[in-house]
Length: 166
Image 1 (cartoon, one colour):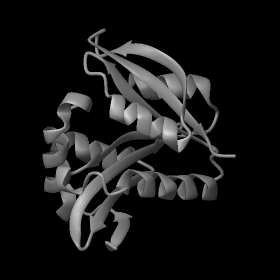
Image 2 (cartoon, rainbow, N blue to C red):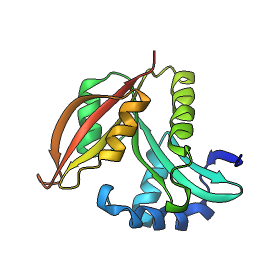
Image 3 (cartoon, rainbow, N blue to C red):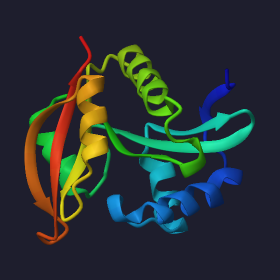
């Protein structure tokens, strides 16, 4: 069994975060150092996931009320009083298909419940890139679609999903 550690991100993790974000930018928004620094200021959680001592993934989660100009976050702000928005979770290619996504979301659930939050939200791209694997994964975790919207100047359609924890 692999040794999986979920920890807070540190400055030494920045290059890894920026690299795997760029490698997956077709299903994420772009991120440079300035945007990563912005996330560090507003995020409730900015986690690294290490497997056997190697960086394997990262997650950014943002709570309601944050000063975050984002169309999807705005939707969830109008829809839920309290929530934890998973802005992005990115698993590096060599570490996929190891069950990390499920382990990360279980940790997100524990964190949210400990903070009195019973709804975790996210979005999944459906156009122009239909991220079927992510849709199936989120549904399997218990997420349900609560809306859809076109974002980024109507260039991308997303499925807005929520996981009611209790």
